[in-house]
Amino acid sequence: MAEEAQFSKVIEIVRAMNAEGLSISDIRDSLKQIGVKEDDIDSILKQAAAEPTSKDIHDAVKMVDAKITQPMTKTMEEHKQLTEEVKAKVEDISLGLEEHAQSLDQISSNLDEHREKLDAIHESLQDLGASHQELHEKVGELSGFSDEFSELREIMLDIKAMIAALKDLDSKILETNKEMLMRLRVK
Image (cartoon, rainbow, N blue to C red):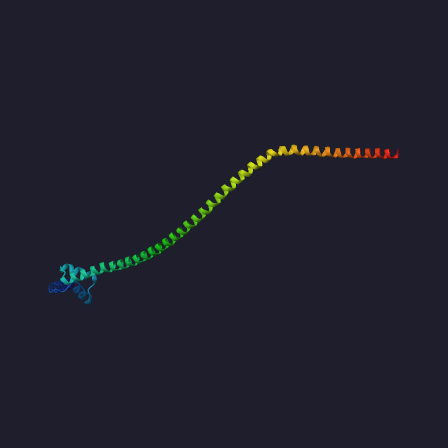
C-alpha cells in the first residue's frame, strides 16, 4: 500500500507540474531522472491526464517538421542530383545525335557520289551494249559473206589447179617446140 500511496503522490505531483505549464517531455525527463521506469512513466502520465502544453505542441510540431523536412531535403537533393545526371545524359545523347546526324549527312553525300558513279557506269554499259550490238550485226553480215568466201576459196583452188595444169602444159609445149626446132636444125 505504501507503494500505491507513493504512486498516487507522484501522479499528483505530475498533475501539478503540468498545471504549472511544464511540458510532458520535461515531466518525462524528470521522472526518468528519479529512476521511474518507461512503462510506469506512461502509466503515470495517463492517470495524471497530463495535457500537452504549447511547448509540447511546439516540440511535436518541430519533430514532425524535422521528420518531414529531412526526407524532403534528402529527396530534393536526390531529385536535384538525378536531374543533373539526366541533364548530363541528355547532353551526351544530344552530342551523340549531332555526331550521328553528321555521319548520316556524310553517308548521304557518299551515297550521292556513288549514285553518280553508278549512273556513269550504267551509261558506259549501255554504250558498250550498243557497241556490242553493232559489232554483233557486223559479225552477222560477215557471216553472210563467209559462204561467199568459201565459194571464192573453192574457185581459187580450182584456178590454182588449172594454172598448175596450164604451166605443165606450157612446159610440155615448150619442150615439144624445142624438140621440133632441134630436129629442123639437124636436117
